[in-house]
Length: 232
Image 1 (cartoon, helix red, strand yellow):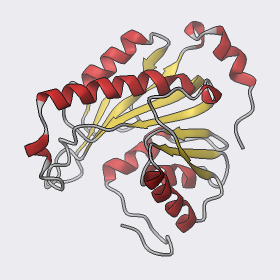
Image 2 (image 1 turned 120 degrees about the vertical axis):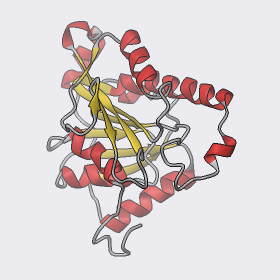
Image 3 (image 1 turned 45 degrees about the vertical axis):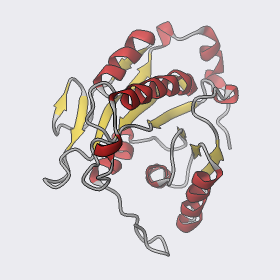
Image 4 (image 1 turned 90 degrees about the horizontal axis):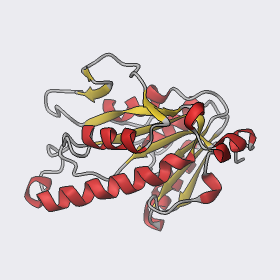
């Protein structure tokens, strides 16, 4: 929900934790790879205080139009909507982003209170297909993170395969990343933050630890790209 004049934007507490956890610095370049309708991106753009740029991407024209509506409603000059498939590598973005937000498609098992049909549609095969999609996306979008930058992976499920198992797999595949200790101390287990905003919705979203590439293991090309200008 939002007001027509964008005086406020209502989000779940857990959704707001994305921007609060990242705590972006002024002038940061942020890529949100599955952003529609754009609430988290709006929050990040506002935290930048008019500086930097938040590039909110999504797969379809319909979804990017939802993002554009939010940009216009909030009159943001440091946010833009881009139609792009998160499974396809954007070579122009390699090593450019201070922050990459990967709030990826998932089984949604944490939001069944609001989407009750999920429990009738979700199967083990579908779950396994989602894990494969998530890993494909992570494998692609992690390349956009610059040296010393941050990748934040989040879902709205309680499923271990989509959460802890994906993080473990990612760290094994990408030793140049490390799991960073979460800034919030509520229900942290193995540097993973489980957000429990209310008794009615016990697991609205599972917020993953975010990763920082370590310079000693980052490919030389990414080191060379360090001095590249941020997109306008």
